[in-house]
Figure 1 (cartoon, protein in one colour):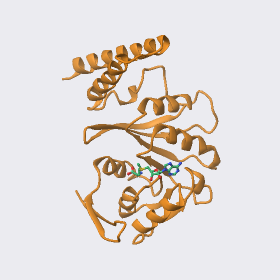
Figure 2: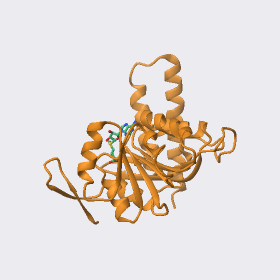
Figure 3: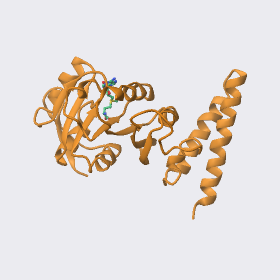
Length: 237
Ligand SMILES: C[S@@+](CC[C@H](N)C(=O)[O-])C[C@H]1O[C@@H](n2cnc3c(N)ncnc32)[C@H](O)[C@@H]1O
């Protein structure tokens, strides 16, 4: 793996390999010439995308975040912008892809809701570790078209990654059908691990006090994941 050279808060170089999940994202972004990295953090992914030849806009929500990001990226040609979600992109030339990585599902949904502010339809590259199902449901309800879906394991966690576009107008124009939760990942080699993980989360929840309706829902989801796990294991060559 190639080491990155960013600067830490004291201006000293940080040399550590790019996280596997970001490495995968940079490969998935290879087809795109102009990319926005929304909520770029320390700009590690932005830097790699720029090294790969993309024109990159990296954003952070707060002034403090942007000052840090500018510092980390000061030796690059990356445009750094401040603002909430897609806000900074409204006044920026159109990008082919918007990447959102390492944010919670609530923030991701909040940012995706802002897509109507853009006068064009970029691809969205979304990566979450928590709130996979919330994001999946949001995409399904918004009739998003899933172009690609991957599971990535890093340090014992499973990250779900989607590449999606949204229809210009709402309506049944997406690719979604009535298949079950997260089925877009069912061909992924990590699918059995994800099914086991999701079943275990629900089993633990069932050990805690729950309202009757909540218990019924969690029980149904537990059975769904157990069933998926069962078939995933049976299907293994
Ligand atoms: C956990 S970091 C992830 C950084 C980087 N994307 C990564 O995957 O390593 C999440 C970043 O998103 C930023 N963020 C959170 N909400 C945001 C919003 N509404 N708009 C822009 N950035 C936001 C935070 O300030 C934080 O730097």
